Each structure stands twice: as structure tokens, then as C-alpha cells.
Length: 292
Image (tube, rainbow, N blue to C red; front, side, top):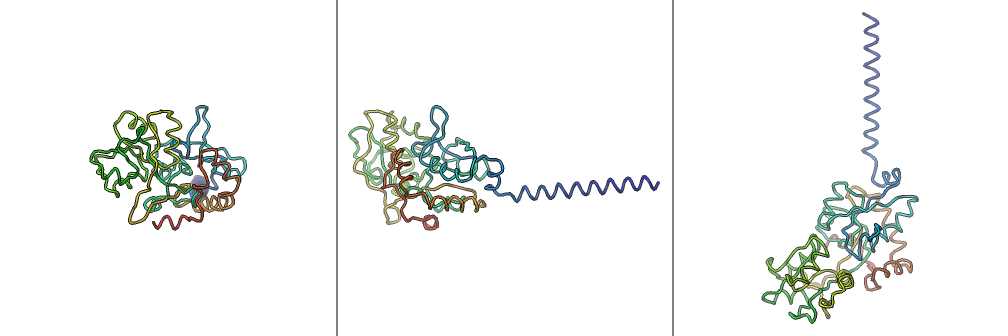
């Protein structure tokens, strides 16, 4: 019986050793940060919403736009890392990154207090104002969110997940006069077919819609007044979005962005997407934007 006992003892010892090794490996894998995983796998996954000029895929499959191209400059500092774009509806970007579908959001997303409770943001990359696209001649004379609220039957379309939905509510536009579209093409079609009287988005987005549509029957509302929210005219700032726990990845991006944003190279890069010095973020910081 003794040999059998010895064999069982050795088997038990081997099994316990195996469990210990497996446990150590599992703990190590769990302890690995997203930045460490990116460096090891040489792949960086970016969530985007296919909304030019902020981030979109070209017909030949290239991920481009202001946010992906700025991200590309930063990611290049990691060496030979492949960038993979993950197309996602704008309203699903935050749930997507929280679920681990990608490593970062690069979609011209505004840094807002309610979003800061769910994800972490880099420091600002752009400062943006609002605008409308309207039918030619702007028949209902809509030059602000407040104009829409005052008009008895004016309707606007906003993109799901965008801050414009909140602006509509806070400026007094009834819910039944706000149409929520999943993306830019759907919003454009709503204006072209007469379902709404205006598209509400940031100035660069509106200009891109007009340039892309090449429709002589729609135009940008000029002049345009930004909405007054809680007694102040709004100007919002965009940034890259990350999971709350990815502090080392956020720190890496902020360090590189501090060297790049506002430089001649940065201005030339984003100028290719229609952004000017008016959209530079200046001295805005994320902690301030998160407080509101």
C-alpha cells in the first residue's frame, strides 16, 4: 500500500503545484493594464462612430478624421502598434468601452460631467460651438435653439448620445419636436425630406454634412447663437475616452497630447479636416470640464 500512497501523494503535490502556477498566471493576467496589453499584443483598438470630420472610415477602409489621426500621432510613440477601428453608433460608445470592446474612444466626444462619472477622458483636444443646417433660405428663421423653442411647430433632429439632446430640453424645445437619429446620414435625410426644419450639431459637423450632401437646398444657418444653458453660453471640449481604471493609459496620452496640441504640426493636421485656430482647446482642462 505504501507505494500507492507515495504515488497519490506525488500526484496531489503535482496537482497543487499546477493550481498554484495557474493561480499565479491568472492573477498576473488580471493585473495587466490595458497599456501593458497593448504593448504586448501590438494592437490598439479604437472605437469610432463614422462621423466626419471627427472619425470615419474611408471607402477604401482607412480609419481617419481628426480624432483618429491625432491618436495615431500619440500611438506611434509606442512603436510598432497596429490600430484597429471598431465602428459603433455614437450612443453605444461608452457602453462599448466599458464592456471592453475597444481600448479608447476617438470620436470627438464632449467631456461632460455625466460622462465623467462613467469613463475617464484625456485632456481636451478641441473646443467647439454649435450650429444648425436648415433648408435653403432658412424659412422658419432658426438661428438658435431658443428660436426653435419659440416657434410653434419647428422641429430639429439630433444624433443619439450627443449633447444637443440636452440642449434642446434645457432651452425649452418640447420632446415631440425633437427627432433622435442614429447617425449623420439619417439626420441629413430627415432635413432633406422635410421631417425636421434643422439639424443641430457642432459647427464642424454641420459644415461636413453640407459639404458631403452637396445639396443646394440645404445650408448652414447664419448667424447662429450658441444656447444659453444655466445662464452661460456653452462651449464644449472634446477628448479621448478611456475606462476609469486605465489611469496609466490616460497619463500616457495626456503627456503626449501636451507636447502636440496647438503645435504647428497639430494645426496642419486638423486643418485638413476643416478645423481652425477657433477650435483649439486653449487652456481648458478635463477636471474643470468634468465639474461642469
